[in-house]
Image (cartoon, rainbow, N blue to C red; front, top):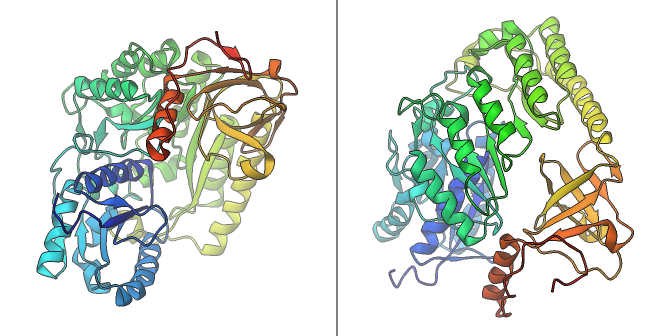
Length: 492
């Protein structure tokens, strides 16, 4: 720790996918390890942007945010601005040319260099641009600071070996590199020891995990090994690729109790012609076969997807094929996107781009259908009992509705109220309630009496208590038992 960094504060702003969110946890850990402190809503001395090159208008969002900071930097010349992530990997020196007041540009392969680059920029009084073409250190080997005491991301691989024509990720994050199973399991065990009870395994294509060390069954084995970790309540993963999704993974999901009945399976298009143009190495029949197999083995699985509307060359017939596959798949949630040109991708150079008005009209039709299906699927949950992992600030309207929120085992968002006189569970505790109402994006449970819901105190709730005590000086609660008890009734 150096004297000039000791009191400097930081803020990390994240754009993009779960991989970026996880990388931002690493950036936060690196900065705190170097002596910086979180700004916590105050004016920061250092602002780090962890960028995305996939989402629409990603560059416009970045430069708009940079422009706002430029004005602040005129008044506060010691303010440092760093830009990392996929857009930095892609644009490199262009960022400094467009925004010469940026101090540091770093890529997806060297996030561990950030503290050094900040020091160097401050010492040399000039911008530092460092982009590596291959991974310097696997992100999970770096220090981290998680926002959650009860849930954590765990990266099992980085990079991608596919060549989807709409995607720039492989050129920015490189070829797939896999961690060894022992390293992953050791990280998860360490997280559980800290109080984490839910982990989400991350990779660009998680189910191709093992290809680098020659074990095509490695992902299914990894899921089963997760089931052997004592104290780990919930395991999720994202995102798999339909072309490589095999029955051994489905079997592992079905037969491992702590692997959640949730699957995010990106469709992208229901048209075989468009899938071919996208270089997605599966067709609609295979995709629907996966959905059928999952539902046969895991009848209560909630399946979500990604869909792109208006890919170059998409005809009305192609779009109707997407609508057909969506109708047959009955997705609990569908993330729908209007295609937009991404510089540097093969699809961006295709001649048969679809007019914006056509894309918009198709998008609205698809959006209406997926919301109707999501509403119908959620209505089937009314009257069912669900186990909810209580979250911190998951529901945007919790304060006005006097409800708490969390995720059910299948990933659905649940808002629930507490009967009068019942003490609130802690984030990380598990609450069991009956669903009374449902909308397209959430479930609602309003138990009338304490006997209509139960709470199971968890090690994650204990971790929350410890974190609160550390932040405000309140004594930590004694470790809780693991028995299920009604809310409002103290355990003996």
